Length: 334
Ligand SMILES: NC(=O)c1ccc[n+]([C@@H]2O[C@H](COP(=O)([O-])OP(=O)(O)OC[C@H]3O[C@@H](n4cnc5c(N)ncnc54)[C@H](OP(=O)(O)O)[C@@H]3O)[C@@H](O)[C@H]2O)c1
Image 1 (tube, helix red, strand yellow):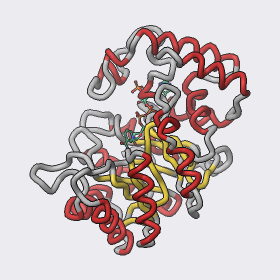
Image 2 (cartoon, protein in one colour):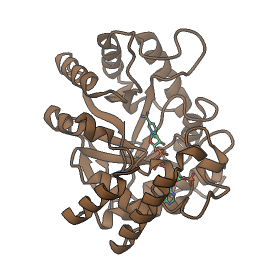
Image 3 (cartoon, protein in one colour):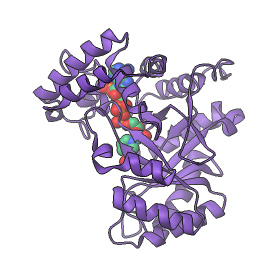
């Protein structure tokens, strides 16, 4: 067991906090996600160090899901251990998020969006995390076969039971989001965030109009994979490092995702970032945050150094029209 943790006294000095829509909740502009690097084969000392580093930088949101691992549930279990050992005094300074919606356990009740699945899954998550409640509980993806009303009624029961403070949806398209927000308002469900993939390489949010819709509906966007899983960083500019996500994981980010066009675009973007006095990763995060509807970007990280570098993105958030046009031009061909 490493030394007792005392959070940095300066932890709130540099982080920016952004409101999710018209809700009362402020998110750190940068959050830490637990999808990768908190699984059964990952290094516990590194996990602990990343959580401490993040919190010391004012990163108050840890984003989890039932099935983050491998194995399913392992990221919550690992997070729970360090929450208990290091973060007990800081529970009320943290926003802990979890989700259910993807494959979790065998049989008809461990997937999608039924009331049965969501309630059972959150109970499991709470026990792995060692918490009485999460701050945000998400339906992780839309379920074409369960009535949306059942899914949202289940989230409402969860909130009413005190097991989640707010609710969220993730991977819902514009139409599904509109329907969800409408029903949530009707049943007084505090549905405050829509979690979607968003990066310079993936502008689906804008194409679908989710950004405009979020502004209209008063909900916040939580942007995931803002670095396109590492493609929008210096990670792959000179080959595929042995400790990178492509080399050591390869499940979600594959060698073939690193196309010649993306690599060429990343190289040009890095030149731009240099001129701004930033790393490519920092510029990619700043670019996501140029949309006021984006309450937070959730980064993944494999080391405390990456978290520190990414938090420094906040030093230069603004873009000139020329820079924005240049980025549009660079990614036109990817
Ligand atoms: N709701 C959903 O359906 C959903 C889906 C996906 C993700 N998420 C959430 O979003 C979080 C982030 O997703 P993500 O991990 O794909 O995000 P990401 O930030 O796009 O990618 C993270 C990876 O980029 C590399 N990286 C990060 N900072 C770097 C830096 N400064 N320099 C060089 N490389 C850097 C690291 O790769 P290496 O390992 O190679 O070092 C890191 O693991 C997840 O943990 C999860 O919480 C949600």
